[in-house]
Length: 332
Image (tube, rainbow, N blue to C red):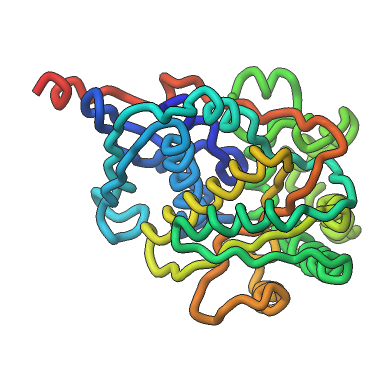
């Protein structure tokens, strides 16, 4: 269960989940406050999606029930996600665990081929299990428009020095950095060669260089590289639901992980594409493109398709860093 949880996705691969084992069949799902993205995710909503992904990864391999914590917000005194009660392993545990281990954020290009309707129907059912609606873009015209929105949004993010500094903080740009910190995103997972990686390192350590590079048009160039693979996607998916509090967003994370695991089982690769939702200037146009209902909130966007190459994996923290045992509760 714990191993499945630590393999879940999280923004910038921060791996924010922390679990307290209370006994052989119970654990608390909480989060590490030091791993909050204070610029990109000040309210902790993306972190809540990550907690939901970890919860769904556990539910994929074992029968669990989840008792939500308080209805407050991350950062409130005493707030935690909830209590996970663990039943038996699922009958297909070996297969399910293999799918959890196989799932990866695939930034490689995808082949230009449609996704079978039966597969898309399965993804819609998985989203619906968690009260979430799946909106799908498939036509080349729609994918082209979404690419434009993503480029505009990403350029705005890269031009924000605080946002870019936070991203650079979570980049592991050299073998030494990758060995020292088993979190964040590595240069290989970003398809970044040695020369670009060194340049990113210089941007991280030299604020004045960042300012000059921004004025010279670097944000637009970085955004262009980021969105290059989108037009070749088989489809782009938006998950949306009614979301008013942290527990709604945890459920949204469960839906995102359920869809992602179903896509993995179907042989599809996936990559989150959150930028268009994170920038107010493109959010409304993105929701309109997906024909999203006004009474729902966008939870996540995933591009999916059949990968044309192998994607390196981001590192994972060792198990002992994501859980503790409450020995008093266990002995009691």
